[in-house]
Image (cartoon, rainbow, N blue to C red; front, side):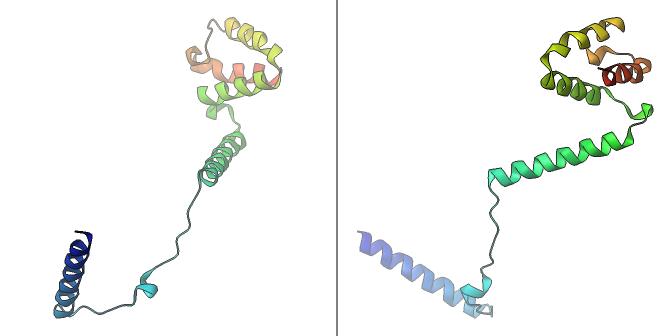
Length: 122
């Protein structure tokens, strides 16, 4: 059974080769067609993503003017501060409450720069 399948496949391959020859296609050795490819591992991809995120953060921090402050940057800044010193979490909450909110997302546009300055003083 297996031998008959092999013979059938071999004849099919021969038929394909003859058809390609009749079409006038050039025969290129398989070795010259094969290209080396670089396989990226998950670690490589993660490193590139981290580098990209760091580059974006650096660009945002270089802008640094009050007009460019956004809520996402402020959230990230709050998280960074709390990760460095957990005791500052309550201080950040108190600052938010002084602006009449409990979330950075609810801050008024006019208060973003003031909140950023208050975070910088922590």
